[in-house]
Length: 344
Length: 279
Ligand SMILES: Nc1ncnc2c1ncn2[C@@H]1O[C@H](COP(=O)(O)OP(=O)(O)OP(=O)(O)O)[C@@H](O)[C@H]1O
Ligand SMILES: [Mg+2]
Image 1 (cartoon, rainbow over the protein chains, first blue to last red):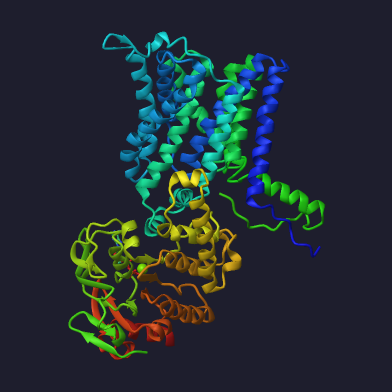
Image 2 (image 1 turned 90 degrees about the vertical axis):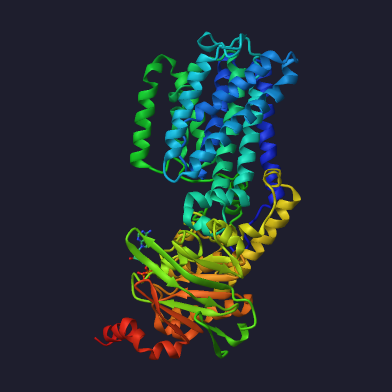
């Protein structure tokens, strides 16, 4: 029992995570290429990947920054249309155009994030909820009505923007899931992430510690919008056809449900609940009309029995889990871990 | 302790600070909340390495003075000179960069974060790596984070709290939370440290330790400390200059001995306290 608990070094942790992720990614790819999974299921899993990016990015604004935006579908829509218009007009080979399309989708959404964020986040109080709610609806209505701009077909409005190259595959979607999770994780575990968390924890104290509140609020909000735009681009390449009704207020609420249910401030919570809540309803297609009712009930149950969400603010770390398993197996540590550790 | 030297109309500073630029000078500072004159004609001078006290009965306006000094409130009148430069128009976070750090009367920690992270947020202004360096984990990130971690532990060790670095700040005992707030304030390398009732809720032995540590902090970092406190042993024990506030106005300024024997102060403040204590 006197042996020192094993501590896995940071580079080794990174390596373990990278290898596991690669195994998952390439394993899935091989399985799909071998025809082991029906296209129906591949489609559902890909959609789950897109929803994971949406949930993880909204979690940044709600769980980490402590704001309550209600227009995440708006940023998704802006990204989806920007990327789809580029993909249908660029004349490039879709495989070549795709990375640019993704980047354009993300950047356009981020620009909207800055434009909305600066005025909304300077105000104290819950204006962000009201303003983003309005933003989401305005975007949808504008997309419906700018079907033609100066005589050129643009978004095609209610007639739908068709013929978008279907470039979103299991592989590239989950590659982006990995990139998103990695980027948000590394951002949060840095001085910038700590500044964002300090605003959630106590604005007045953060201010007096030298944290530029407006700057970091806008940063957190913009990063959130950027990844929503990426998810939107993937969504465009997943459906191949876009209609403004895809991005209604209910879509924003659906994403918020992922985050609240998983636990605001827990990335693994967002990932798990987005996955389960995407796959379950698709498998229970015959009960589709019940989906919103089930959502509402689930939310109420979680709020009653576990208000912090299923995972609370739990922050999963593969390295830490391995450490614990090895330490327990080799008798360096007993099963009763010491409490009081933080994550966040 | 150095001799105190009077400065015309502003107060007193320790002899060793006389020839140096004062860290803080206010002139005629005041603020009204609607019809209430919360602070008026507040004129003080704090020496470069002075430990100064601000005392007065409840509701006298002491915390309001701290909020004015850190631009949480915009003054209705008067000026604040920090290290010889006016702080007018600066945001609160910019005041921190210019050299004032503070603690709060009702503790304001980042409760859900670790003790170390609380201190590292205080270190925010001493770090400079960019967003890209953070996300891509470039060398600048590792170098500065390693330094910040070491610095956080070093600062925590002032109060023997380095072994608590991984604890959740909200789970600390009350006294330790107050000490953590001081460490977090020190992390931003202030020239002037404002402490709002640092000994509130502490027992006599904790208070004695705190007194010792405030003095140690001043000596080690060569900074000025302005503290609000109701514990007269602490105030009289470590403060070199004291200003007494009553109904938003300074009614006396001077050394602890002068304040103790000032009849106006005794009437407004100490007298009442004395009666309470003997009752
Ligand atoms: N934001 C505000 N709006 C209106 N009145 C205020 C505000 N802040 C403080 N006051 C008033 O100003 C006066 C001084 O309050 P302050 O908190 O500065 O007192 P204090 O000397 O710190 O008292 P204590 O010893 O109880 O902490 C009080 O009458 C208080 O009600
Ligand atoms: Mg007060």
